Length: 611
Figure 1: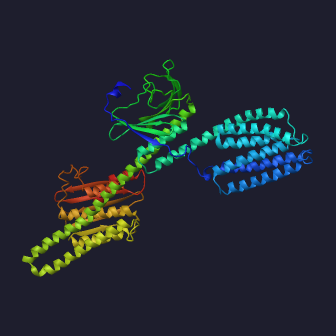
Figure 2: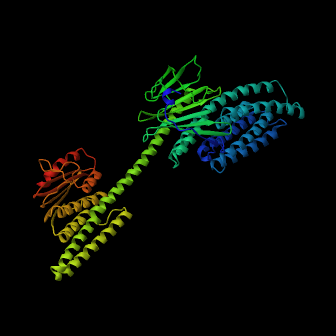
Figure 3: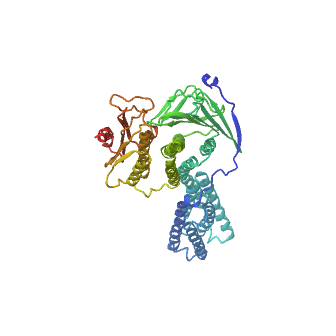
């Protein structure tokens, strides 16, 4: 370990043994790979038709003593093939079960057909190539080799036994029964090798699908990472894996170490202040593989993730994940081309990694990093949405319910004064106070209804504005002149609600802070934006103690916070003009759709409203 890492403060390695109680290869439903079984079942029927044609065309076989047995075998094997095809096509059985049963039946049927057709033109290679190919497509090279050895051993043994039990005219044993198995072994290896390549491609695809499913599940990140590293070790047939990630919040490095043992896994976690892996010979965007860690051959095959170039570099200062590791795969963890950690995979056996293994690891790490980053951004977006909803509720309470309480407080104070000065007007004042309380109660109930139901309100935007202007004129003793379009602009429900609350807050500030007696509200809609102007004749707005500029406009951030936040949430522009003794004018514009012309509309709103 480099000296810079040894002096770092570290937590002791927490080690846990995880028993691998699940099967090595997870079971996959038939629907996932039923296409393969359907193709094999259909090809089996075609095989029987071809074999039957060859046998029936031969003039010797139908008239020979074994002719009836050949016919019976073809009928039984053909019936079995039709039943399997129907079951697989209807997806009524599991793939694992039907695959094993059909292979066993193929071995028996093909051995009998080969034996019975020895006296004429035998479809020996046609039958055996089908069986070997079906095993190769299903299970790869090793299963194909085992099946080929079984067929190669059965063929001479069954032929020799038949020659001893039956007469030599029908069944004879010759040199062909010894040489044909040799050809069969060579053919089986070639077919199995090709099938293994196809099987590995399917495994990689299934592994990537499992990766996406694991990332999307709602489970702790550490548990998901450990599970993926265990699957990666099984897939690459390796024994050691380390994952190092940079925590963007704390700036510390978290390193998960997973060791694969015969019956369990050992998992450890270490937290350091500095990067524990330093590969000075490779740039941060390069992954590499090393199959010989001896000091005499210090070279690594490097692959640049960004440029796609493949180079060989001399190694220096390479640290093994374990002392007995013989070969290594290393992939950087990149997010927006920034290094956030490494994935290191090592093996202690004589197995050597290939370029395909390196490319797969790079794709696996890239997809995993993108998946986890997407999940993290979704969680952040949910947190921001919650905060924005809380801020919206706070603005609604400030603009609605709190103003109602403030109005009730003013009327209670007025009623106290009437008790001593004009007691005869007290009943009328209490009646007005009762109406204010009732309106506040109705506003709170309406707001709760809006929170429960996100559908569009039944009242139109212009109807709400008319009612709001009438309420302020009646309740706050301020004459409100409303200038609006003749037709409803049909704004989105959220935008209409926010604009209504902005007007309410502006009129409330005109009454409470400016002691205004008149106000003008002007609303207009264009194809790209909506503009709004609220002008009063009050004493002006102090703007949180910040004076206006030479033109009378408040600086950014000095506007009423509730109005400012609503306009920012709508993506609009806000300007507030005020002068002592001359009143206040709140002007804003909100875009209806993305348009280049909308960006120039805000500059003209203030002049348009003042004119």
